[in-house]
Image 1: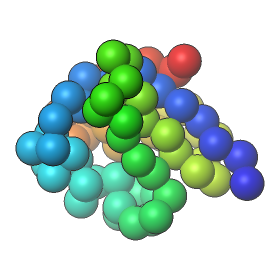
Image 2: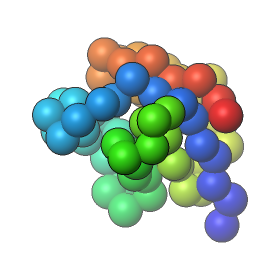
Image 3: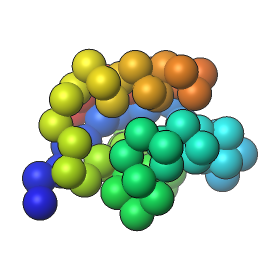
Image 4: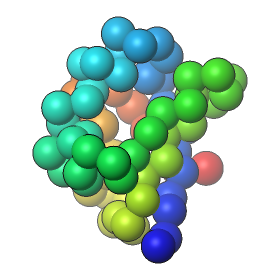
Length: 68
């Protein structure tokens, strides 16, 4: 399955908790993750390739995403 990665400003577990409902609704509970240990705070989405849709969902949650 295809994955796509974004640099985000989702920095901590609190940020992840805030973004989770938006990301789960749009992409499914097991189809995304944020690596907060990476300096770029990388969001990985599995199975979705529409970059503009991903950015819109992240923005709706209150964060920014930039494709790596």
